[in-house]
Length: 174
Image 1: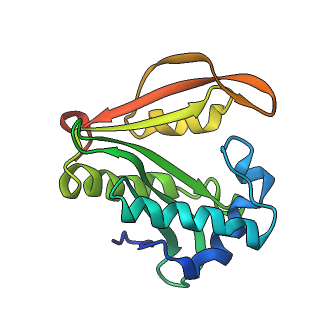
Image 2: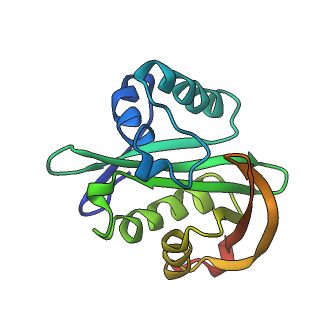
């Protein structure tokens, strides 16, 4: 899958160093449910990606600049429910690539993959409520805010609120 500036390649075990670069960075994982301080610990995430694919419950891609091949982040679907034709979307970028319009350019490809190839009707996003930048970014790309789940999860020993966003097949920008 490609855009004018980026290519997306399904994550494989050989991508562990790129994944570690992102998921060991506290700026990236601040609002994320995982953090892997060592390359060895990152194997858990690589196993998760492989299990998504094996169980047909999701798929994730590495995001690369087309010209240089430089890795800039990852995105994809998990919690894919075929019966209800929905999945959760996730995306993270290395801090040096924040604010470069990557989300705006890559999301249409992910929408197309989800709605056309995976047969989804609904793509959901769950965002820690105090992650204001992520919430604003989702709203910019046509996700609807559906509500707040108060004290939905525990992170670092404290309850956190989570906002729910979604985009429906019939409402996504073509």
